[in-house]
Length: 413
Image 1 (cartoon, rainbow, N blue to C red):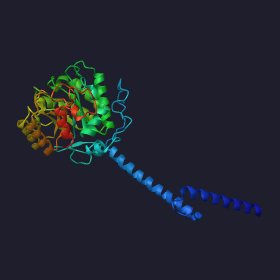
Image 2 (cartoon, rainbow, N blue to C red):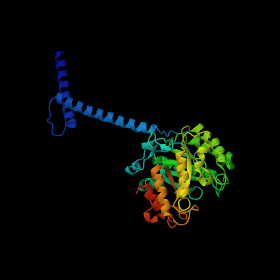
Image 3 (tube, helix red, strand yellow):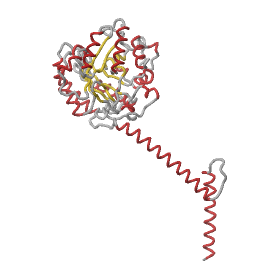
Image 4 (cartoon, rainbow, N blue to C red):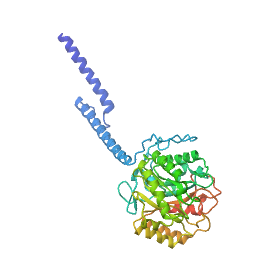
């Protein structure tokens, strides 16, 4: 019996020694002498400690990333509907394969993107980020989605983000013109195009604005039932997308602020009942120029609401800039959701002096802005030359003069 025990001890000792040699071979540090079992144990422990520290660091970094992303959860919403004919998109309001904030780059960070700044809100006259710091959205508006849907694609927005420095894209969905949402347009396709755009912006860590683009319909109350239905569905679908902003009436015209106010006091509660803290942009009379009227008769629901100013530099000059100053002094938050450097027709010559004056005001007051328009339409305000058929990765030679100016603004040049 003793011999058997002695043999077992011998075999055990040999096994331990073989095990030690294997560990020394696999775990030994470069240049360190092979030694006793104690040295092997120390080696393994050090490796384990290093591994634990790495794991702890990884967990810590993950928690930081999660906390930033949690500010803007992109969890799927069951209210969404599947987008027809678009193999690359997900259901409205649902996350795509890359979650918000998953895509980033040095240039994206420089543009001030969503994963860094999170859900936006309004404090005083300022748009602020999730950390309470003043924040500027600066980017591009599409032309009509029914007419130029080809520019609503992820490669285009990546170009705007990485090459131009944009952090927001505005989707202009006309309501009454040819192909308009309320005048016989293909609603399914329009909603699908919006969805494609929102998904692309989400994947690229950008903000986005959904624009109910009234124009020839003058008074937003003209299609109030359609508007109520649209904004109820859209705000439910995108309630978990904290990078989405709602612009409820592009350019009221030939109507009063009281009429616009009636519309806004109807639509804003609908949106906020589904997306409680969403930022909303409300248009103002005279093609969104009379922003100074807001403070004289404020909306019933002013929380997280900003008010649109649109300018075309050759038409709108000192008089309109003074309206903006008056509004800001009265405490009205202003968002320049559409503008260009030519006249109000979208055509004509660029007025450089007025353009420079508007830029000075924007910089001094930290106003957010979206330049019109991402298209190759044969007019001055189009950002792409009419001769260019590309829908992304544009060179400077393929940009119009307006495109070159806006790109320089966005790049901070």
